[in-house]
Image (cartoon, rainbow, N blue to C red; front, side):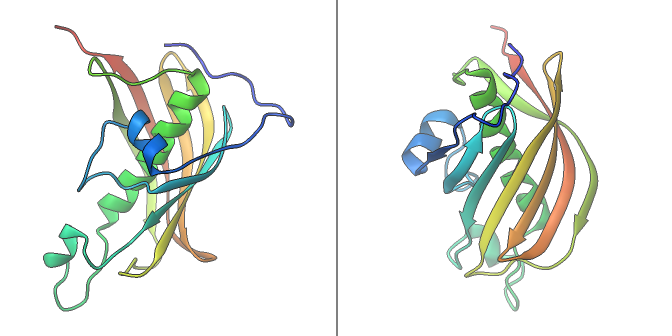
Length: 161
């Protein structure tokens, strides 16, 4: 895999609707957790949205008396946004022979619950990319309130037959 281009102040920001996201990520319902990309600057940052609905399947058991989005799914949403940033930065398209794996999660902190009706704002910046390992600083917000933050690492790999 190639390394991302060096960002510049003139790098244009791009957006993606759900149709563009579906072309890039292999995830599908119920695990696709990015609904829209409102800003992506290659090699630098992404800002994406996840609209949280009471119809999410995880709310049936987490928790029926007080629905809360599981923290691990907030991290997964951030990782999916990070994947979009990584693949757009290096200019590749994932196919059935390529995958992006979590390589690590450090410093994960959860500050407030995410409930049905919230819009989760996913902000991820690329910290470092070296030898196919990508390190990101990620945070999730609802409005201007910090919900979660973590350092994420992922790697892109080609599957062998």
